[in-house]
Length: 193
Image (cartoon, rainbow, N blue to C red; front, side, top):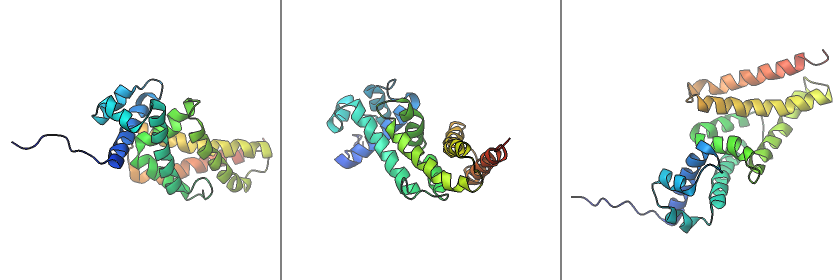
């Protein structure tokens, strides 16, 4: 009979495993409604093991958000190098880490202690969208509205895609580009009416 003991992971590897499990657990119900027991169950470990790596549930949640933030920065160039091409990176993070994406954009925005995570990227997206939109929208107030609307539509479109089972992933870039184009068209068309 073979050795059936669980494989012992080195500390950094165990920590990454716990952070990934935390993202999955927290993405289901958010910070307040998720216990460390829920995270431990998701990770297949004891709560005591979690406390060997993290001092609190808040610290673990923060680590999960930081992990996704790092992925988003690497994939999109945020916040300083965002461009129209950054959408592909955003899609890639959503596809490769759907729980982390949901956690970052859906749940952290609802948690006052952690809201800054989603807000900084949304702010950078607004700043990136504005120069492109200025080419088709002259009215300052309408431009501000459109610059805030486009990132919201992008994020909500990706969340809806993930929530529906991420169908037809190859079509996502084209679909998202068309959705954004239609939003921009509607905002530009409505100007001055």
